[in-house]
Amino acid sequence: MLRSIQKGIIGGLKTTLTLGKVIFPVTLIVSLLQYTPVLDWFATLISPLMKLFGLSGDAAIPLVLGNLLNLYAGIAGILSLDLTVKEVFILAVMLSFSHNLLIETSVALKVGVKLWVILSVRIGLAVISAIIINLVWNGGGEQAQYGFLATKHEEVSGWGAIIWQSIEKAGFGILQLALIVIPVMVGIQILKDIGWLDKLSSMLGPFTRLLGMKENTSTTLVTGLLLGLAYGAGVMIQAVQEEGVSKRDATLAFIFLVACHAVVEDTLIFIPLGIPVLPLLIIRVVVALVLTIVISRMWKENEVRHRKEVSYEH
Image 1 (cartoon, helix red, strand yellow):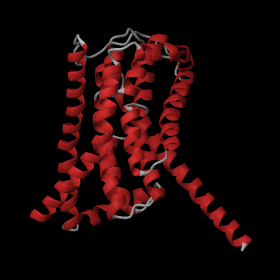
Image 2 (cartoon, rainbow, N blue to C red; image 1 turned 180 degrees about the vertical axis):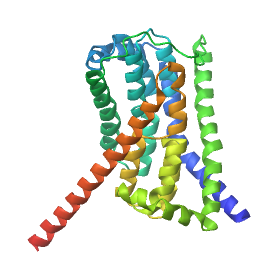
Image 3 (cartoon, rainbow, N blue to C red; image 1 turned 120 degrees about the vertical axis):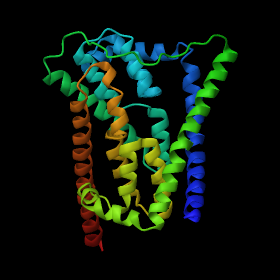
């Protein structure tokens, strides 16, 4: 047991270091940009596109904040605006698919998933879902009634204070990562050494096979579903190195998780917006399942076709 704990701690520290090299600089840079005109300029730039999604121009602000920072920043942006229920729901769906892009995309790249796959899936799902909801839903025109206010961003003045606050925020991000990743790695190592991880993989075998993946991706899927994409990536990095998870399965797992991850936290934090969160959760789960299954089967058919062409040439 002690050896399992030691191995888990070492694995957790290595993962924290790997992901921390991405999270710290990105968090630092974006935190500094909040005190410059850059984010407002970008929001103004994309505001004409908002009509396509059934949103007002102001809605560009929470979209930018949510995509460059995290869901909490996006929700804080929503709470600062007077929006309809329909607008808030569309924003919630978009942000649930596409948020924290810089960090979570960089983390996924560490696993070996291609950049165009991550961005096209996340941004594509956000855009398509918003257009469909805007077209099919005729209701929701009443003013949104927010449940309670989110924690407001603490403003500071002077570049010295701004830089120090940004460093603190980036450092806290690394600490938070370590406090989650290390215990998860220790738990996984213990389960692995006592043989329970193999049993869990077997139990989830039908589900992973349905998605077109092998059983050794089940731990990554469970971790990502419960804890989030970044933490799921931490487990995936170890799984790719130690359990031989294929590049194909790693990509499919991330396609599923970019559509549906941290299902408990990312669903509950939308409650203050006064929107129905159950439909939001159902949309994420169904889209993740359908998208992954379709891509998996298309990928398999393409591989079969390629093998036939190769054998025919020879």
